Length: 247
View 1: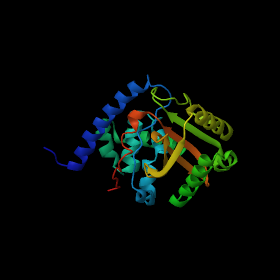
View 2 (view 1 turned 180 degrees about the horizontal axis):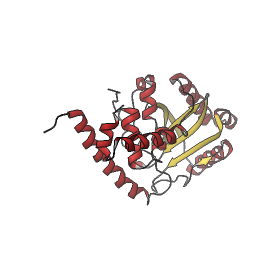
View 3 (view 1 turned 30 degrees about the vertical axis):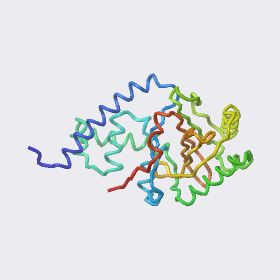
View 4 (view 1 turned 180 degrees about the vertical axis):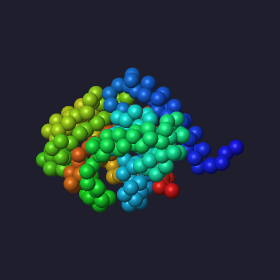
């Protein structure tokens, strides 16, 4: 007999998610290049909910990929849904003390890699607009001006589309890689501003056909992270908006 429906749902959902994460981890061992989550096209007003937007961002999803399945489950349950440690412990099959320790370790890991200062939706949109304008006009200096010196570019082609096999680090290297990729494509690129996982992003098209989705991480008015999903198997949800809410 179920006495606490919420705790019961947390437990079975977490265990299903852990099984799924462990299956995906085995698949990723044979994945070609970096693995990025599937981008979601979200409503623009999601960006107004700063906490929800941050929890949905592709940048945070990419960081969560570096956690173990159990650490990731504990982090999401505690930091996103504010579940108590007793319920978390029951969901992952460990003691409450162990759940607290895992939560502390996962939070430290994530905090060390996530943006240090919150960014408003307006600031993120302004940086994207500057990037988009420079990209579409071929203004290399304009791109350098908006990219942080230590910007990281991560692309996911899944072996189905050409992509960098490792993250590209540094404004100069990112600029050269992007310019070289545009030259190799040999067609006409267009961009459409949109909202991806609660953050401003771009849908890029080559000769009218969707080439990929580009998400951004912005700090201090400059782009510090670029996440480009080209794998066609991960682009199935960008034709229609995915409704999301924090409640």
